[in-house]
Length: 356
Length: 138
Image (cartoon, rainbow over all chains, first blue to last red):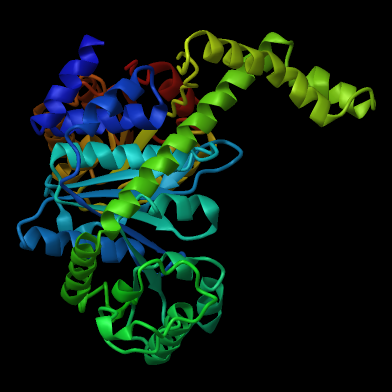
């Protein structure tokens, strides 16, 4: 464990190798990684975390590259986590997002880290959240998380960010349709990238319309002006705070040339400021901690149950029994859980309120 | 709790350095490594030694595979090794060189700290096995 302590010290002192190694341990769930992350917690809280998502080919990596370069011009340090899928068969992956990071060559203050989805349920969002902590403790001002936006897993990942930007390629009516299925709800800012392509005006208009429908507040203005209160329709039960609704702006960028990136970053800053002003940041942070705790508990109990199943001779015997109609999945689950239940109840009654 | 279920994957950087546009070999290796279950980070073409070092350090790869077919290995490989040393990343990183390396130069590269040199005709399985056996313990 002494190795881990020096690792933390070196990370806090700004040693790149130490940061890289901590993230590796987080990714590998190496023995002791939990203590490492616990250790990091007290040093976090200084960074703005931005999630970038969008369909493949929308230009995420190129935009992230330009964002990082622009932040650097403004004197801020940047951490990037780029997530690529891995093969569900071999577990292998080719992580190619790094190729696009052409604007930050040799600049160690842009710390770019590729991660692959290693196929554990909920594991990647935990690993991402922990890696964000590592970057934060290291002292990065801005942390960007880049991931393909499809499916629950990805949505969970971008939720580890304070601000979520959704990229939409222009002229893709179908993609905008796809957005309805869940991505639209998570976007705080929408970016029509490749805005120099024909059809981008239409995509911007369509997006604005859909956002209006989502928020159902016809008032204009980027900041969901206070005057907009009172126009809510009842089908949107999530708007807890009528006066301070954030209506997601739609910005246009050309990531390849860097056009519009400055404005986009300003919009992100606006959102960060809004989060603080309205207290929404606190709410989100708390939601995030709640989600993290739930995920960890789920994983830990699952591991405990797996251990119990192994002790009973593995799952296969049960499966065969169910297949032979000797028992059923519910009975099996009850049987396995039962000793755990009794144990927990016994501890609870013997020392009031026991956990761990 | 001891139920953490460690999941370790071998991470490899496949790098093209210098003015050398021949990336077929690097692509083939990248795919083979992926299919072997490794996580592969591909650098892209025409990278400077600094960039390779930056990528290797930040990605904390176990293996750096450098593909050079331009003949500039005697200049580029030492620069990469020096860079890795600067960031304390040399000792526990396996360095492989692939491409066209004259026999006379091989010894020199191996002495510098390169783990192995794979030239034309090296089999994919041989390379993968070598990585599995020699990936640094951390």
